Image 1: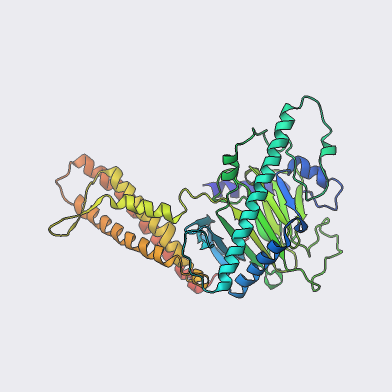
Image 2: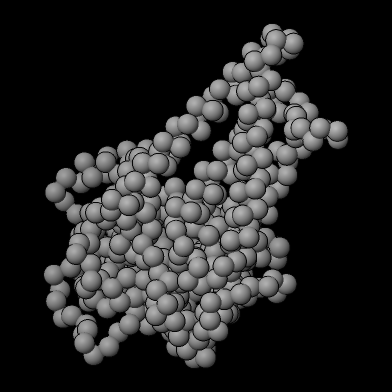
Length: 472
């Protein structure tokens, strides 16, 4: 439903534009910093020289290690019941047992070496790479807390101020300084306690991206502003804790072979250099922003910026890695959660002490419905998602194999429970009204399961036959 609304908005916006293009600014434009201050102030930028050199070295070596071990994969994502192969290759690294879902594809973390977990990596280099990204994660958490605290101090001061202050003087034109929050951009926020700040900056995973533009046969053109080649189309990041900060470390492999262009054909956006683009969501009045990204630069998207604005990644000419740290919504996306759901469902299964035969404790419609919903969730949100991506995780670690084997064991018991429901509803001992209610909700979930199994079978066949479409 949400994706349909987005497609409708996009179509309407493109129709309004026609052959025209919206204006956008880069640092070469005189009004760039004023626009940043008033409309994009929750985008915080840190130049590479503000980051410890040791951390740069560790993180950049980890990127190269992962590439050498062929750990980056293009994802087969699903939009409007069609599969598309992403031009960007990715790998998810984070807390053990965490997952991240985008565009109907669930990624499973390669666990970083968190305390209390026994994780066997395929090599010492892989261990070091994951450890370096965990170090980066800790660093970005601290930076995000500082940025939000600075934002809240500014807002508190602005609320208390009774005199008009020339804010132009308080805003530095340097990209490295923290942004101020304009009342034009969003509603005034009240100061937060430390717990809230921690919840919105405690990154539990990072989605790593890699792309070499010169190896791509085709890249989509940015449609609204004419910004050139896109590596990632306009979007809001999905499946995040509300108002949580997203932190991005960018590393483009710049060398003498790729020189910055002197062309001015793209309104100041140098096509040789990677940029992050931002725009106010579904707005044709506010100019867009294109900020250049170089080796080791960091940017933070604070508070509700990810909800009120959209961002894209504009391709340069050199290969580029990025590490995008997120507070993923873990309410339904962790191993702990799905194992708990399985235990809940199996509470309705019992074994006869004499015959060892299985039976159900209850045939109430609500109980049957809950169990069958969990059955579908285990199969289609976890098992099929995991195995659809093949053995990619084994290049790093075998950590997920045991949990998946356990989920498969639970699934087999859930299949038995489905058979027991079918057997019981054929009997006529039940009260007719209760029986009909159970059958009604049960059949709906069985039909959904049948439909999803057909879809997944088609996806497997399509993957084997090859996918030629490229998406964002």
